[in-house]
Amino acid sequence: MTERYDVAVVGLGAMGSATLYQLAKHGAKVVGIDRYAPPHDLGSSHGESRITRAGVGEGRDYVPLAQASHRIWRELEADTGATLFHQCGALVMGPGDGVTTHHGMPDFTARSIASAEAGRIPHEVIDGTEVALRFPMFLGLTGSEKAYYEPGGGFLVPEACVAVQLARAAALGATVHTGIAVDSLSRDGAGVRLTTSDGPIVADRVVVSAGAWSVPLLGAPFDRLLSVSRQLLHWFALDDVSAYGPGSPVYIWMYGKTDADYFYGFPPLAGDPRVKVAKEQYETRTTATAVDRTVDPAESERMYRDSIAGRLAGATPQVAKAAVCLYTVTPDRGFIIDQHPEMDRVTVVSACSGHGFKHSAGIGEALAALLADGRSRIDLQPFALGRFV
Image (cartoon, rainbow, N blue to C red):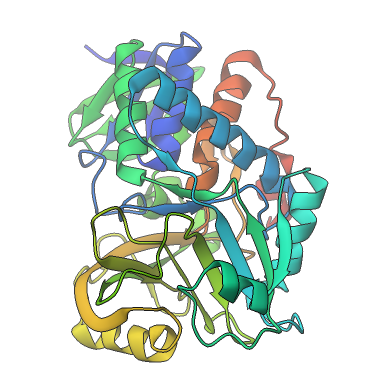
């Protein structure tokens, strides 16, 4: 017998788990489907920590999503007792002359400041001299740097965020199917038929939040708009943790002019003498099935040599851990949140272009309201497909 639902959510990482949870809160009959068993380390929603902040340099349109997400994380913590959001502060820093790009945006620090001012987000604008005084973890500063500091920022625990929202969704009546692949979507009267490895499912509406697995399922025009890139995460051992006090922030440090001349990172977790750092690359494309999930030691050596040495106090070249994650990226590195142009009952939530986790809880809430009530308090139009097609 074919299972029937109000909404089926395909892919249960950051976006899918949030959407499933919020739909269940609305009382919808929902099913979530994932080919693996999230939280897992095969997609984009893993790695112990994800930066979050409300003053986002990608643009003001993202601010309401980040603010809503911060509220929801705190609500989930209160409801479940889980620790999801470490509010240690967030620092975005670049050269004082503003000649930088990050996520394709010029002068990312100034854009972060502008977003914070527009959203009335508490923040400070400080220079490199003040950064060095407050945060001795950063080395080699000239004093001329320009920095945006948001005390309300910090980092999320992605695996816990996904697990908690899936558990809450199930407790509210959602059905969760893991270890099942969705092979195709097709019209089924006024609904959508999902052909899966475990038999057909029919839903009035479908949300596809499958990240790097989205393109084969969605087809045109997403096959030419979405690309998957392999990203590296590195944990370097610290030989001295004294510079990392309780006020040590997460950070994005743009030390040069191009997207390659930067890194981002996190303070060490309590009792853990390691520092997690990363940067991004978009040039080399891959797929969810073809990606090389091993990290060559030479890749970590290059990361340390080019970006970490002389910039982070106590960081040694000893690699404590390394991992691979996937970004699914649009041409303008923004989000796509919109209906499929060929299937109006299919809503696409991809790609999030490497900066989506911080917004995921808010996106789930907005989507659930849109699907259940026909309207959302947050405007999702800036993320519409029409800007590309």
